[in-house]
Image (cartoon, rainbow, N blue to C red; front, side, top):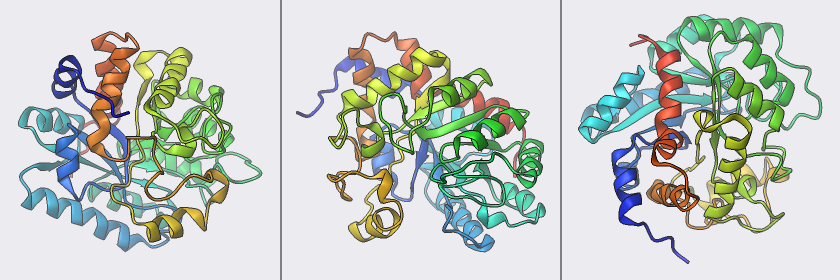
Length: 336
């Protein structure tokens, strides 16, 4: 049954700063504007991106879009998100899922930062020069070069994201970083024993360091009954569990929504490479919780949190203010 959005939820959602901790693309601004999304962390690279220049070209595409479409702005510092909200625009936050593209040249980090990248995930699902991804059978933690890179991220006001990072490597990243880390898009292992879901221990460490845990709507991560496509209520259970662990100040939303991903793209990017994190019901059309396959669906989470009895001020935090707080602390005055 389709979630009905009450007048209260519609008003609260419209008033709130809404930040998505991970979106696959914001090139189509129509669903972004329809869903009231203020800003999103756009993924420009994963472990399959080994070369530096394609990432920069992707970044430049968003700079160009923000230049030619007056509905969008680039986010360099947190204040850009506030200004986007005031102007009724959408903010582009550039990030990566995996730093393989950086190679061993630290100058590449500076170049990436100058091109607008702000959120850096050290690994994707696999091992790389920095550490270990969440699908590796063994995780020996953050490597020596990884510690060097984390220090450089800190120096350049770039935020460390440990969403796909292996447990020990993620804990090491959080310990090594001088500023908070985030789990941009994840779900709780306590409710779903999927290798892409994260442990209570890691959630607590990220929260204790001042970070934010972004809860995803991705089907095989958000389900709470094995191999049963989740509903909005299941997503809310993950949100509630994370709040129980670290408090409402450290929980957000990171949908992991790749708007209009084609069946071929889903087959190539997920089914052939990572079947261990998928479920039998999943297709390109059912890869998110029922009714949550688009940025247009975000008001349903606002309605759901109201239905749980959460105070409006707490809902505002989960919708975006918590991520905004961390962005304010980390991004500083790192303008390009």
